[in-house]
Length: 416
Ligand code: HGY
Ligand code: MN
Ligand code: MN
Image (cartoon, rainbow, N blue to C red; front, side, top):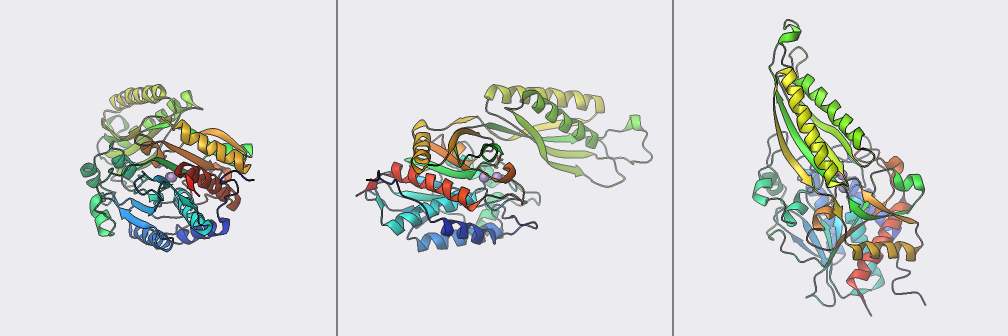
């Protein structure tokens, strides 16, 4: 006699087809996606997700940050639901699976429960968190951060993108600003399925990452101010070159991260140069330092060394600097009970698995502050993500969704 739920498997074809259908919305230029948060493409993706939720008989709620909550009723509606989901927004040159696998994997759990006629005591809520990426509007994990009470809603409404558009106004413009107060929902447990976005699982030939921890992150936005001048007629000693300053800071960040690797990383991905003319010395540069580590002490040490280094560099180049922390969260330890549910599910289903620390940030990192939370990861090809060439196999997607299915259903308690 199979143990309860032992043979529960999701419908692999339906999950894969849904991912491919969603990928048609906000296509990139190289096979991936550009469905940035609160753009028209994001709005279109939300409508598609809502149509699928309606077809699955789910009741949709939307909060004031635009996060979507699709509820499947439990036999005891008074119990706090089990939440399952991730994000549908992508990087400007993102892949088809980052975030999407977790939202549609959650929908597939519900679709499979409907197919099997299975009821659960706790309701189940499939969730699409707004603006996980933080690419268009910083910080990353914005809506889940407001939900967890670590980010201020009125403040993030005013955050602007490169065109000066405000997040709150864009959310309203695409018609997805809900009326539900953010953070009022009680969560029994939250589970997130996500691609690893690193090479470990594929290199070791392992199907499932049981995510025990998430590394911490800091985003430091730096503005260097020198002086615009002619690149031809200005003597070298008289230059106050903000472009040179940025280049030296980028090198500094890399060297400091190398001192602390393999458990720490650092890079500068966002860079702006003004006036960005071929024959004008850069008078101003704006860029964002992204440093991460599973150890808070390491993160703080890197932060301190970087700030000292910037001061020294700017002194030598006679340029001014401002540093603004535009994103941060401490390293995360996920809930032991939820982690065990994921490990037991992988074991029961016969999938190879290993503990893993998440290198990337996820909505689960914030929700872990307000509810028992855990993540399950599947491999991705060459560990590549935040690149349009991001790829996974259908088998990896199914294995991750099967494990998610068991962890969610077990926590929501099958009835009958
Ligand atoms: O930046 C991150 O780690 C996530 O992909 N937003
Ligand atoms: Mn993601
Ligand atoms: Mn991402």
